[in-house]
Image 1 (cartoon, rainbow, N blue to C red):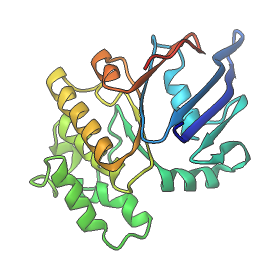
Image 2: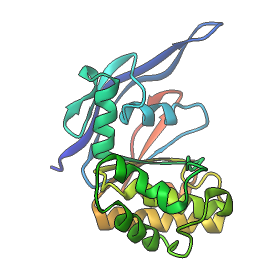
Image 3: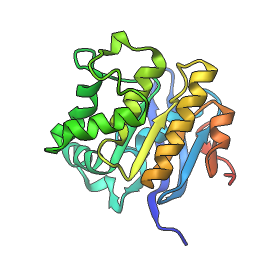
Length: 226
């Protein structure tokens, strides 16, 4: 049996809206094995991004527990959760979330420098070359296309050799051809580094590339498929 790198037990997320209490997630339990690839799918408003945020420790559940890389997030404060993410987790978002004032190279170097890595520049150059951007090192995000910005974001996400990569609609802002290239790149790096990949997507082709799929419907986890 594969070792679980993410475990969720009876997760619920309830928020107070002006009209009534709104249940976003309702009693979700799951296990994700180390090195696997998992797609979280469902209609808009089904709770996909909320579930991703809870699994990554970016948000806390109303009830339930998440165990991330062997540590329960319940007993950690915000700083401790941030430290665990810095050590174990990479992120790729639909909106790229690059820093406009930094070049492509500096954006990828940033998490490495924060981690005190002396090889930050060399590692960043290697990864940008790996994603086909070795000719764009000194370009700023505004000088890059959407696909190029997402490739910088992927290089940054893999920079610290994360055990887990969370991706929220990584191809959502890209045209079909560019999205397909980004998908290939994600899975290529995932295989090379043995990273656990957990992604939220509306893209059926992207979901089908994953080893398993978790279906959310109105905040409840339906039967998963492998």
